Length: 382
Image 1 (cartoon, one colour):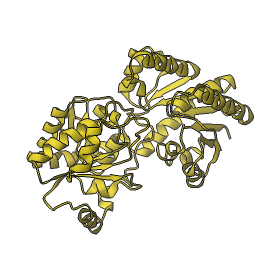
Image 2 (cartoon, helix red, strand yellow; image 1 turned 180 degrees about the vertical axis):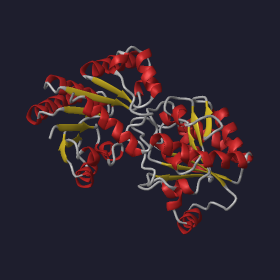
Image 3 (cartoon, helix red, strand yellow; image 1 turned 90 degrees about the horizontal axis):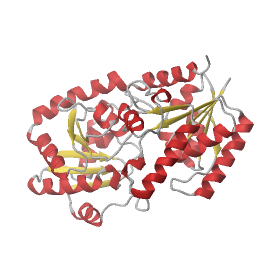
């Protein structure tokens, strides 16, 4: 059986971004997962039934550590002689594609699930542009996980169009529609959670799920909701996720509002987001940049209309006034208006909710995405 090596920078990405896919691909390839060490890597080994290997990688610019990771990967590839090396996340892509090229791996695939460099400027942007082009030059195939990302890559001359391919309708892993189903959350569970969070029966609940960082539009979202909540006392905003103060801190004023506004409920990272989605009325996702946002897929699959920023990925899942609302990026006023619309137009909101799940099931079912990736792998054998 030919070997397929999948690499992410940190183990939680290998566990969550590609959940279930490793086991599926094991029927066709000998799959090996590579990332930094951690409990999540042990979970991948156990849950997916694949072999794993540790190579420490950083998420920041660290030339010496990056060279060390490249050398370790090169040695590992020489020993394993894989047919395909497939990388995800920026740093794993750079060191993984270089090491795979040096080791003579015939098929080197890199998935792009967002471009952090789009928010950089000046000399840092120039450096990141060079690194991005270098990564793509070492790969034999680049897989942007949305059509919008594909266009950005072409517009920035990072790679030739012939080297690019979007899998299916977008997404890196699709969505398990049988798992993200609102009917699986019992009324008892919902009532208990509402009581715990002091959510009243007539409250309209907005929810954000993801990292609580600047790039996810949290400063604008919290600012917008703070204004809205003063006029709309029967509302709540649930923030599900963790902060990354060392990499992408929030503004001090945002931190203060989150602490002081009692209508904002910061519940931290949750292993199962479904109960929180089930008690909400709309997702608010004001991100600056994405690849193909899983959170929008998950919320939509559970019947939630979504307010999203007008960026690639988001505007490929949400259709204006059909299954949600699209607002300009970094526009606090537009966010306020969109949330007000969801409050004052309950019928339209419910209509969007009924469309939301069917739209996701039709286009982004996990099994469909997995089979499309498998087709891409199999085409390399010809």
